[in-house]
Length: 45
Image (cartoon, rainbow, N blue to C red):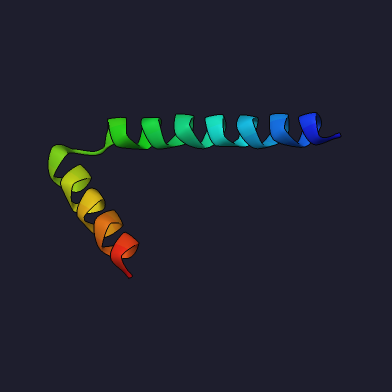
């Protein structure tokens, strides 16, 4: 059962990565820089 759960989690993660990749592809460099800055600030909180 653990293998099934891990497989589902890996699939969900890979789908998230694909979605994020598509979003980044649509973003301009300035938008990407702003998003990374926000992510860094969120990580510090």
